[in-house]
Length: 276
Length: 266
Image (cartoon, rainbow over all chains, first blue to last red; front, side):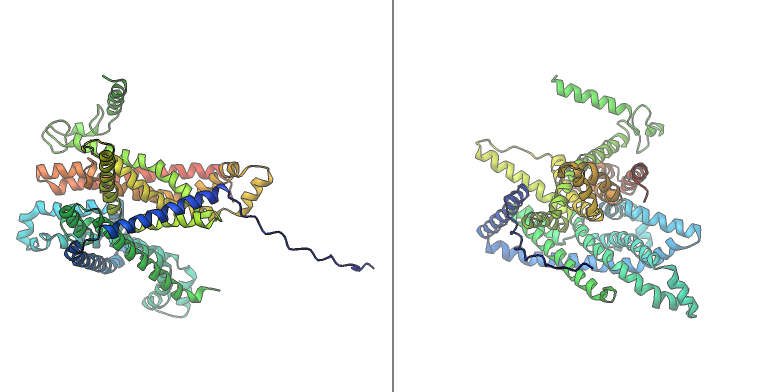
């Protein structure tokens, strides 16, 4: 019978890894240093170019522009969500014609640039002014804001329909069967079983869609809506001061990062029962 | 004539032979003479076709630059060196957070100011203009690379560590391991994501029209203003973009099948 007769002698701790100046370290230091220097230079330049008259003139306008952007995006996201439900149902429909129509809609709005869609609505419907006047719709299409709202709603409805469809289809078949076995009605099944699970899957893409819409909404500035980008362009065309664009960049980055962080928190909170 | 210019002219005439719109075998030639989209001086077919080629060229020029920067960014996001990771994250946060339109304006006007200042400092009078195509390629590359780095980073995470270790066990250097073992698998995993980014890139090229580049949207816009047929011409622009999207999805599914065939079946 063999037994351990002697223990391994205690060993000294391994030597600390030498932190050498490897190429990656040097690159990291140089690049981060470049960012820091650029940030300091930017702040210094902004402080040097600080002009209280300009801030008083354009500051409030930026804020109203920001409000315009957020209103436009908020309304179009909500209306798009409403419109996306029948679209998603149409995409999943077993009726060939309905699903082809829904697919065509989604393909068109996801395959063409938002700016082309906006021009199609804003300039394109102007071609049919007489007909629209006869229908009494010209009052709506005359206003760039309404055209932007319509284009954005139609666009985001297509994207949201795909998000919704993907999320609903990601819920496993067993969930439907389980609900059926419990004798739930189709509406109850959808409302109580499918939708809550689908919404968790859809949460992240919805957040991305909102961020994409906020960024994409900048193009309304081209059709004379004075959102944040529009106010920026107006301020630049009057002052020829590049800091107008820098301030717009700061505004957009703050909105997007805030939203991203809120969404991450929200997701963490809503999926806490799925974590182990 | 300078040799380069004559080469350019020859290339252009060679390319116009294969022009599917207004070339010798272009389908727009089938239209009757007075129609809006016919070729030549009476219609807008050739102008729109030129814009279409600018759009495609812009996207094709941006793609390799954006992919290369994106690859380096995602490599930087992988390293254990914190400063490098932070530098890459600052880049992606900025260019993913800014609206594409704002990036384009900032690059265009910023470059203009920078070039003017530099020219004045060197003693030249102003009078330089920034090419909107170059500004567009730079701006779109910045945006594309920021998104591509995220796609490539998640593809890197999907490759097991054992693959690197196997490479080192075979005595390959890190660079060779990357090139021979990791990158071929990376392409396979990242391809769907990169396909999506390509579609987004195609759509983003339309934004360059606002700084005066004669792309599809601008050319159709000019035609719309002159002929007062805005709905028709912007509809044409949308159809052209849809055409690119369809062609790209066909090409991508071809690439995906060929890449999958070369891979191991698991």
